[in-house]
Length: 101
Image 1 (tube, rainbow, N blue to C red):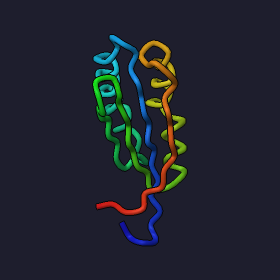
Image 2 (cartoon, rainbow, N blue to C red):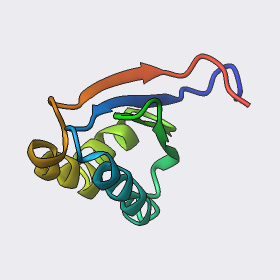
Image 3 (cartoon, helix red, strand yellow):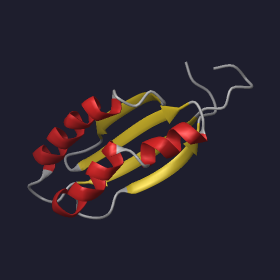
Image 4 (cartoon, rainbow, N blue to C red):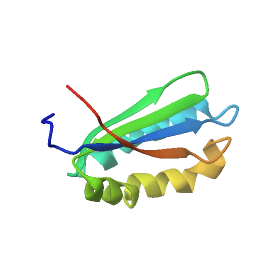
């Protein structure tokens, strides 16, 4: 990453409801096909941090790409499924990328 290049990201923390862990896994895996249609999303990772704790980490070249993602189909699907799958609302943090390889 060049020193003058701005990169931004999102860190999303998800806590599955008891018994919904596998449904969250499947939901996250299905999100990949939607994200692949977003040219402004540079990277997108769905991860599992613990038995019922999941995360999404994604990066964008700039704020407009991040904003487009937040208004896109993956975010829409997440908010629609959240009451059924998640123990609490997703924690969505806007982050700045300081260094990357």
